[in-house]
Length: 467
Image (cartoon, rainbow, N blue to C red; front, top):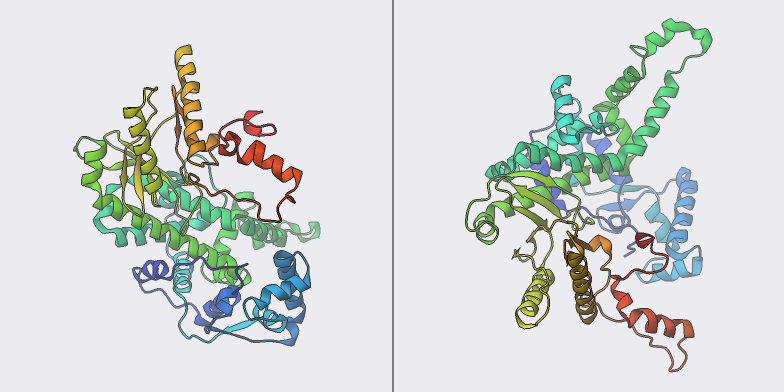
């Protein structure tokens, strides 16, 4: 199966997000079906839910899509592309069917489409402008986000879905912390749809322009008010419910991405809250001497690259002052690393290296937050670089890499590695005929792969981090 385009939707997450909401007002199932068909991924088009529906008028666009596919997949080489298709039992004719129009034969729409239906309906619900503006201000802070009013109904839908799905666990976060997390969703939605909305708004403004001969009365007739804000508000009104459905019919992949993003956010937030609820006692024992942690009063998302449906590391601050990092992935390697440092501290006559406490949840974990702070005097500076050398030696021995400045925190006299994904990396060796490895490859192994430079902990020429 071609992997150049791959679905990232978790159907179970989407189904949960869609079922908890009220029954939506009717939106044309034909329109939703068209969005589903036009946004179908290659993987889905190969399945039994879709069938090709070739039309003569689609020939030109199919040619363009095939050309783009060949360019992206095989650098424009049709022979290489044909070989790639053969791996999956396909040929050029079948590939052309895949990029053309398809019809969904499964009568049931996918869960993300039902969630999309609720998103469209949410924009048509009565809106108190004052309350909405105050809510948006609490979410995004002082810096406005482009088209934030357009996304606000989606944020409210996500909030109510999360509240219902997480139950009492929802109360473990103060309202301010919930708004901080919702900001990450707002920024994600804006990143996906911002440019498209800006393009549509530009077209909308152009359509409202009136020639000088038309006079002022015609301008007032087209758009209530005469300022830029009035034009903006008019555009927002035009993109509600039926207007939003028309927009999604024009940009079906955008519709799917927005519904998927909202579903992923709800799923990740629900997962975090339920884990936090289940781990309360263990977290209190490990990080607060057995005392209750209190509610989460501050939460920062997007501390890492997104994985597994957009999940990222979170910075979690509790009312009692405990500060943790939540990682939505297995932290076995990290826990083992801290245990190794503890063993070294206890058994070697060396300056002790900083270790962090962790709670390993198997598929996720909680880690004590380490905050950066400067050295206070010359002695701490010297101790820092002494420990940096020790850490460099250890990472090299553990075949570690990618330990650059973004994965290291300078906490006074302690350099602390905070990302352990690239420890115990395999070495890729030359497997060609003996004696035929190029001088450049040999030099690369000698000066980089087989040296401490491979850890990325040392400065290198041309690295902008070091000037």
